[in-house]
Every structure is written in structure tokens, then in C-alpha cells.
Image (tube, rainbow, N blue to C red; front, side):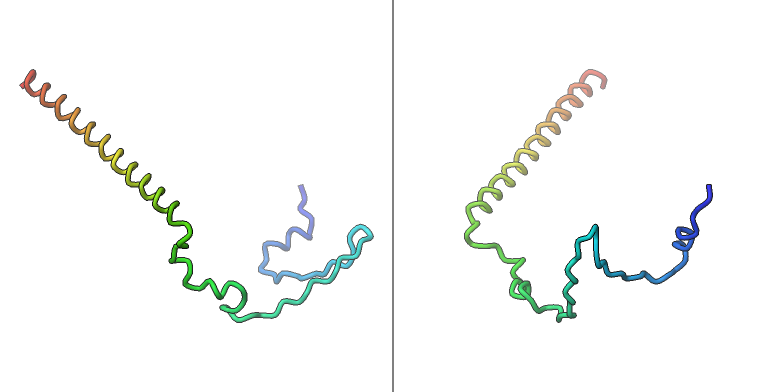
Length: 100
């Protein structure tokens, strides 16, 4: 199978070509507005700088409920591990009495 010569050139380190679409199926495409390079911290997101680490005070009931659920899950997991540990200690103690 022969690869077309257009596809063979893609392995070279060639520069990308920018094109502008003027018309698609008879419909003209509006020109793209030019974007100026803006400073890094300007714009609507600059007011949120440092806000990520603070929790909104309106959501405190949710955080309390999630915290209680998290602690309950940790305690439950610890209790299950403790019961498994005790069961194995009892089994090994009985096995030591029988065999040893």
C-alpha cells in the first residue's frame, strides 16, 4: 500500500500552518475576533485569588454532616479491623492450645 506524499511529510518537524475558513457549504463564517495577550492576573478570575482555600460559611451544615459521616466511616472501619484482629487472636490461641 502506497502512502500519499501529503501524509509522508508529517514525520518531519514542520511548522503548523494556520488557515482561515472563509466559507463552508455556501455559508460564510464570521471572522474570529483577535485575542490580545492579557496580563496573567487580570480578568474576572483575579478576584478569586486566594479564595480556594476558604470554605463558604453558607455551606457549614454540609461540611458538618460530611465530617460526621467521615468520622463514622473511620470508626466503623477501625471497629471492623479490631474485630477481625480479635477473631484471629482467638483462633490462633485455640490452635496453640490444641497443637501445642
